Amino acid sequence: MMEFSDRVTSVEPSATLAVSNLASELEADGVDVVDLSVGEPDFDTPENIVEAGKAAMDAGHTGYAPSNGVPELRDAIAEKLQGDGLGYEADNVIVTPGAKQALYETFQTVVGPSGRGTSSRAGDEVVLLDPAWVSYEAMAKLAGGELNRVDLAPHDFQLEPALDDLAEAVSDDTELLVVNSPSNPTGAVYSRAAMEGVRDLAVDHDVTVISDEIYQHINYGPEHVSLAGLDGMFERTVTVNGFSKAYSMTGWRLGYLAAPEEIVSQAGKVQSHSVSSAANFVQRAGVEAIQHTDDAIDEMVDAFESRRDLLVDLFAEHGKDVSTPDGAFYLMLPVADDDQEWCQEALKDAHVATVPGSAFGAPGYARLSYAASTERLEEAVERLVDAGYL
Image (cartoon, rainbow, N blue to C red; front, side):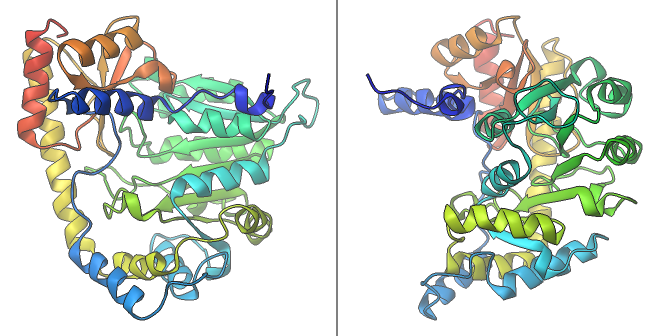
């Protein structure tokens, strides 16, 4: 019998993709499924970006690209980050095939199988803020790390009132802390006070922090605070962002990390020996996205905000109070204690696909993506009500 490594067998398949696959099977059998499970904008890539990609291919940009990214895009990303008040230069940037790859490379660079300091752990400690995106746990395990988790659910998914809990979790044995604002799966946007609390802990305990800002531009009003801009954080923060969400470029696979050069030099090794680089012509389209697509982003965000308001109101009409998200395009719906069974049965009976909250460290909830038309969102709620799930 074939044997597999412990680091692979310790990881579960992606829960979001598992639900999506089941929904696809039903659809293949002719079932009309309202799929609210996948984190993908339901908007086409803006035409100016598509045309830039075509022009890049026509111009012959179809060969290998420099491993860390073409200079034009690294310059554009650095300029964008500087506009956000962050002190990154082009040499601080690695362009990756998707923000997920940027995260994976960071975990592989910072986290290892042997604990440091006085820890008795077998692997470096990674602290997550629950609910947390499903792949953080898998990435930590694949790197050989061990998890310590802080539950934000009792605090309406906000970080600021949970800072005391975070202070108990973070110590000199902590190697990496992951902060995602706006959050997947909750849509929470963390306050400046919360981020300053993270800063104080990271500096006191010499902790590296990932600031996952992939939903930065999908924000309905609160201030967006980038950790790398706070005093003492530039030298210990890896800022991760990308093009999939804000520019509706999920299939293009384009993201980046920005970090101190000592981290970039090490993470660059992981990239060069794994995926080599992001696609050359895709990177050229990325330059166009950063420089000339603000209006399209604004239109998409306005649509998401209207859909959020619609869902919150519909659930309230049926006696379900939900936390109103301030960013991203997700909503956490309180369901049964066995949220996995609830999601499976809701898919089978009501033909509405959602993701169990337990996959994110939030049992008793289901995550809904409102990256769907208002008509489909209304239909989803109606189906859940008619089938007795609300």
